[in-house]
Image 1 (cartoon, rainbow, N blue to C red):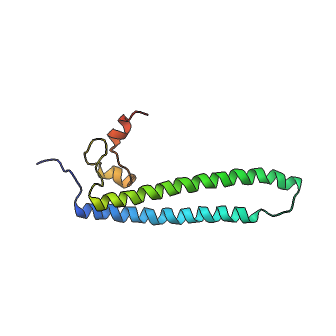
Image 2 (image 1 turned 90 degrees about the vertical axis):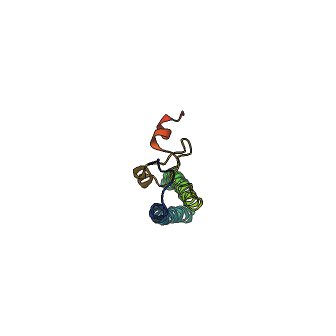
Amino acid sequence: MSEKTRYSDEELKEFEELILQKLNKAKEELNTLKSSLTRESDDSGDNFSSVKTLEDGADTAEKEQLSQLAGRQQKFINNLENALVRIKNGTYGICVDTGKLISKERLKAVPHTTQSIDAKLNRKP
C-alpha cells in the first residue's frame, strides 16, 4: 500500500470544523481586546494631577501590551483563514518543506501549521 498523499474529504471536513471553531473564538477574543483598547482611550480625561501622571505610564504600557496581543490575535486569525483556503484547494495538511502529510496529532494541536514537526525542527533559524 502506498503512502497517503492527502487527507480524505471526510478528514478535511473534521479539520475545517475545528478551524472554524478556533476562528470564531479567536475573533471574539480580538473584539474583546479591541474594545478594551477603545475603552482605555475613552477613559483618559483632562483631570491632571501627579497621580494621573504616574498612571499614564502604566496605562501606556497596558495599551501597548493590549495592542501587541491584538496584533498576535489578528495574525492567528489570518493563519486560520489561510488554512481554510488550503482545505478548499486540497493542499491542507501537506508539509511545505517535505511534501509529506503532516500528522493528524500536529494538525489538531496547531491546525494552521504548514510544516511537519520534523521540518519545523530541522529548519535553520
